[in-house]
Length: 200
Image (cartoon, rainbow, N blue to C red):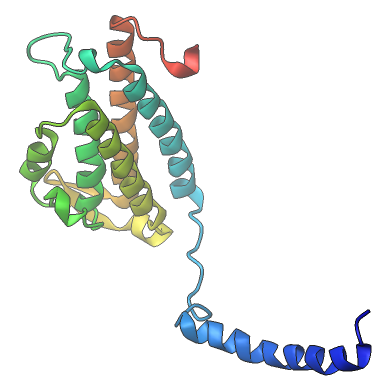
């Protein structure tokens, strides 16, 4: 049986130590209490993020469903192959945000003011697994950049492809670009007797 008279001082000591332990934890993670939580995207940015999430899921589903031996298939000599379409999307998922001021990962070599860097990135030789991993990372980059687009940034004017755009127009262009290539990949998959996973 526990001796209550002996246990009571130990319990008091533990309770007294709690504020000290909490302070030590805050010291161990400097700035943790002061760091404000990132504001959740609202309005257009939130809607586009939801849409991009759906495109990402479908595109990655197709990338995994199309067999390795069909990654070099193309509908004509002047058209991109399956793998090239996926790498093109990945390249622009870095390049378009970089054009809007969200710098790409330096390891990509992509610069927002030099389209040729995106072309070089797209033309790299990668296998199926590397291409899928690259596509996943590029979507994470794209969503991070859009998540930081405040209403004020969406109204800013900027130059992209030598033309003037608002931030809103640029992000709409970025999203419709994804839909263009999702439709292309659906046609590629169907041409190779691959049923899109969400249609099964």
